[in-house]
Length: 204
Figure 1 (cartoon, rainbow, N blue to C red):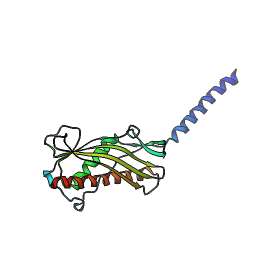
Figure 2 (cartoon, rainbow, N blue to C red):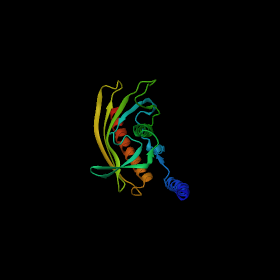
Figure 3 (tube, one colour):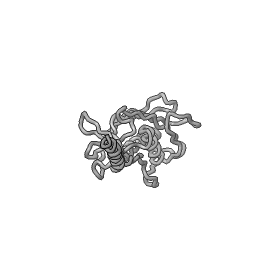
Figure 4 (tube, rainbow, N blue to C red):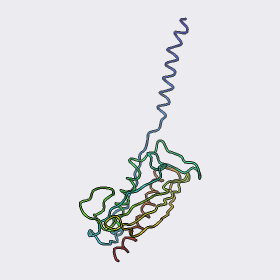
């Protein structure tokens, strides 16, 4: 009886040590955001200056991408969720913010708002997005596939509809920080394509 009583505290202590060791090995969670273009004057080609006002969004993504974890494509039918590598906020909001910042830089206008939201001034164009793919494979190759539309100032008249596809290699394989940087570069390429279309619209 005494032997069993003596064993019980030892068992409890052993279990506590195992739990403590497991907790000590849990890696910290790292949070990520997409980055916008740098703001040098050379990037800004201008379409109408501050006279041009834009509404960016809404941006929609597939449900499998609209989650906290950074998603990787392990195979054609298999996804990998990085439990300790997460977005700092909702990914659609992150993409909208970066697209708005990029277009503001590329078109030399401060009159860019993310949608949907109330706006004090009327916009010239609204750009909406349906993103079909926005992830990397396990080698760090990022793919962005998006359908986007440019609407007139009332938000109803459809002026342009396009589908764009971009790929960008991570500089460090599947390292998540390098993958997010590559994702940012694909958003920059999409922004440049939209800015070019807006310049042509504005000239007409």
